[in-house]
Length: 113
Image (tube, rainbow, N blue to C red; front, side, top):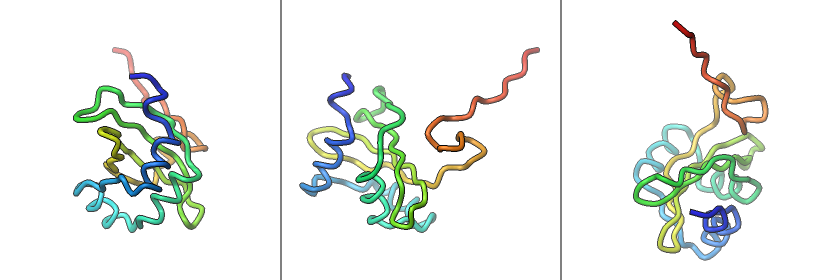
């Protein structure tokens, strides 16, 4: 899949056109993490894609980093297929797993035996 088929502008356009689906998993996680739909919309509006998952099923997906309504960094995973954006999950990234800007995963320490 080419990058141009899954980009932040497509996701923004789908939100404006209300062509979005929040998966049950996403809604459960949002509830557990006190994340509002407005946080997701704001995060997409000011966000950017930092990872692509082209082999995800049933649709390719990506990880967006943005800031929520309170200016807190948020990660949003969304898939795109059949002209609809599917919100898969959203969370506040853990600084122990992400670099300071929350855009680059920290390398896992691997010991050689």
